[in-house]
Amino acid sequence: MKIRRFKFGVVCTLVVGFALSFFAQEAKAITTATGKLVFTFTVTISSTIPENSVLVCTAIATVEGYQQTMIGLVKNPVAGKNTCTVSMPYSWVLATESTDKIALSYKAEVDYGYEFTASNGTATSVELASSDKVTGNLTSISVPTTTSTNIAVSATI
Image (cartoon, rainbow, N blue to C red; front, side):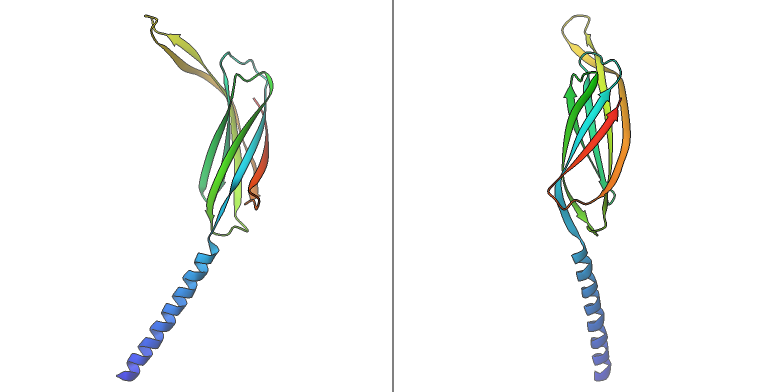
């Protein structure tokens, strides 16, 4: 009887020791990457721009199935070149920081609307009338090791 208990104890100790070392290795593989991606959009608008338009620049970063989106605005953009900056702070938990990639994409659009005044003249409302836009994928990048990374985006609407 004592021999069986000894064998059972030894087997349990080995199994628990193996499991603990496995989980310890898994815990070491997970890291948190923090920083900021700064997207600088140069958007050329080649169409006529209605009064009171807004240029909306959207930056999108996807890593390990997690997607983060930030926007920047230019009120009353001009025909020709416009510059819009989007700052995206991030803090991502990564399984393998050395090989994980960030997929970058963007959207730039000109939004405008018509302002309506109520028939009694007491209230106004703006109705979105149209939106000219362009979307695109940028390159995938490694997770930056610096605290701030600049990304240039060039688009034509």
